[in-house]
Length: 335
Image (cartoon, rainbow, N blue to C red; front, side, top):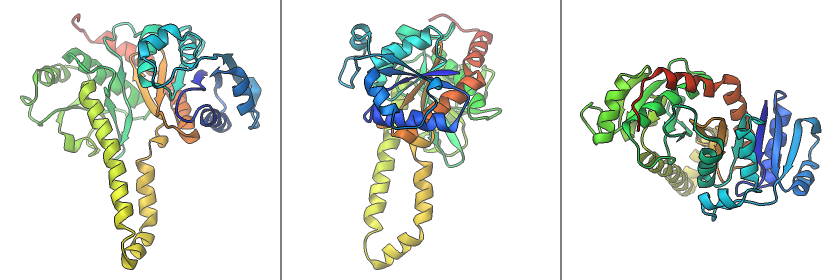
């Protein structure tokens, strides 16, 4: 397997990206990497590690797409950027998956324009894995599609099922629709119509999921439009930061509290690890005709290593083939 890695995407590039690649190459021996970016800088960073150079290829790409660049213009005009060159490798089937911690907007635009959607897929969906009370849950979409049609949500469910079966080894994923109530008649026109479609879809659809149950562990896949999904995701990120901030402040008040905190330290460490996004790697962009893994912009080496491992599991499981077959087997009306 070959994976393309954007060596100059993200807040900590290229150092953390190259270090994460080195970690992944040391942990797994069933793939090779194509690194895109400034060739001399990549070579310099790689020289810090004892690596098998036969498993590494470098493609020179002197331009960088920054977070400030307008996505559509950046993809169009920065053709020699590390992101565009990596996406072209996936488009041309020279790499099975693409990993980047760079601009989400540019990646979404580039993946759609350069690589393209799978046949039959109406819209791709960005799908992060979130920690839950029991196991984890795949949430899609979280921003690729602000406005959706019921058909899109039906396809999100099919794609989410394929991912959780192939990558997370969940045999019959439990699917839920995020809504403002559990009753079938609740919600707006989008969720009401999507509910009817999902009831007819060959997935394990459990019905509506209220916001309070998103992390309950009662669902393996949750579908929603990108507007709702992005709000859920950003709220969770902010809440986790606030919660740990409050705990840190309260657990340093007084000697008795400090003693109790010291005793509970292993439990707090375990909680922090469970909430750590670096354990999951990144969010796949499902529905694109190639593997696309979007790592967090602030990813460190561990997160990049996890994202590459995620690409391994994605490619090995043949997730895209499963999605193609699932979409082809469900009759869908035209847009």
